[in-house]
Length: 168
Image (cartoon, rainbow, N blue to C red; front, top):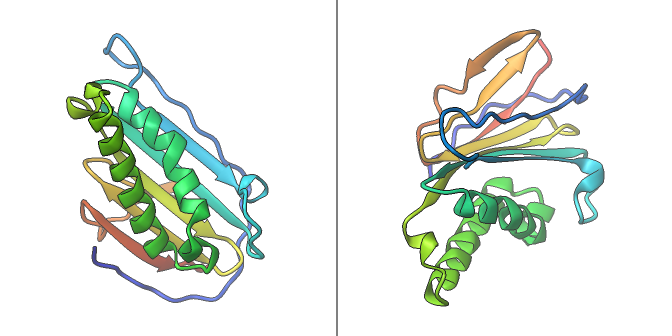
């Protein structure tokens, strides 16, 4: 995965966060999302962090639910995450999630062979002003600032990028 890096040095404050989902025209909701703020990260880290993720289920909700449940744990347990190497941590967590899904399939859960999920996620280090954003699949990340939103357009599908944020 390629990276794109910009550097700034201001601290940030998360004013609020939220999430919602809508079923749309499908008979059931296949998508999942996660918002994990610093006080709910289960490992000791000195920086203030937040994790945001959206899982777009394809074919059923099972893979999206599995990824939502396990990807966070794999991420937080990663020594790379705890060392602030977020891109490496995300790659490790996704690899472990893929292995976990494959193991479930081998143990007889064949639904994992006919359904799937995309993931778009962002790790924000508010202390250092770092945003690591990435996606696998057809989902994308929007960044909002003062009532405006913009797609992180240089973030191609299946890529992760590190952005260093600045207050403008």
